[in-house]
Image (cartoon, rainbow, N blue to C red; front, side):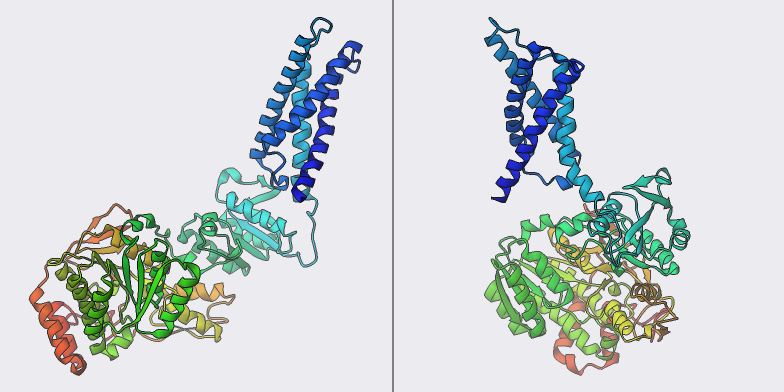
Length: 622
């Protein structure tokens, strides 16, 4: 009803404008003195034009648009509609004149037709765009609480969106004072009436000179290194800092908060996020029974979310912790209810239960994310690292081989490269184990190796956030400690992509860019929380923990890499594997696992990794 009322009002306004344009075209054509014989032509032009223009406007959809958001597309629609309407009006008047030729010389003057077209474009276009003009300017004033001065970094599409976002809120969130952009061609120009005040090197000067309270980074495509540099400049200036994500992040659902948000640590990774073609996944998980071990963990639960998008036949969630499995099951059932979810509480060291579940469900794809991953904790419990990581994986892999699983993807870590920790050595043993199984199995066994995952359980970020919330200190093991970092979505996408690319026996590695200093990460997080490092929140160095290295590596000295069809994913060349030594190790662990001493665990691992703990680098804690 509201639409019909609005349409009728617009049609009535258009009818008046059409008659005004018709009269104006004849008035201008005859310079204010319309001959008596032309009045009847004008009259028929006005009648035919009113009917035809309104009909054409309706067909072109000019009555079902929100004109307060009008842009060049709407202007082109008006031009096309007016052109068709003018041509139709001239034709109707002409053919009516032909029919009456015996008594009337009926023809619309050519100049009147041109003037009619111009007048219609001006009047109809003006009547529509007046709504946008009013929307953008009628409320262009300060309102109570809008005294905050805002500087926008980035004078591109995202910068325009940021400025309009502030304007659409009647400046309640702040008033844009200027733009910052490194493009020299934009300097001293105006965008939406707002000046470009300089480049990133001028941020400190502009902030001080214009009393800026808040800076919005509107550069969604900027590298992490560029964002880090801008963040550091802004932090020194003492202003609040926010960032605007890419529009496609909002559309895809990766970001479901306000378009302008607080800067997050993920923005400071120092490299472009890795994107993979998850559509390729549909070919090997759609309709399959998919097992996910460790399904309640940070990586496992995200794999569940991603796999559920591609309609597996069954999604079997395996985990040791009942609460985490319950939580992810409830989430999946609420978001994607059409899938057959099965939950199983399982300790992967329980060989009989593992075999029972593989025989019962006969999965086609397995993602193995369950593992003990905490380095210092596994130094204190080395036999548990061996039992869970090595024997648990062997149980799963042998069961997968027996029921002829198509693809088995095991999650590894960069700590498996030249390992110095027991956890890392067990994960390297797992890599060798699944490669040895791949040599004699129809199942395609592969591993995926990556670094630290931001925001996962046990990672430094949640620890830092808790310490900051408690007022500090933030504890860092060593001022020179560096790590490779990736986000949870990157990690899970890499795991899933590896399954699609698997031929069997590969270790897939992500190009993780440059490693990040842990102390720099701590300082960034303190600043992003609104504090100043060493002033408001202290940083305390606690010393390297048992088994830790100052830096991590992605390849062993024997491994090289070969490229894949994905520019950021590589494959490590396989090593020579002594299958007999692996079998002896797993046999001893099965026989004496819980009774093995620390020294015996180390000796066992040295049988398959000869360099382990024999040449300990200086940068490794003993």
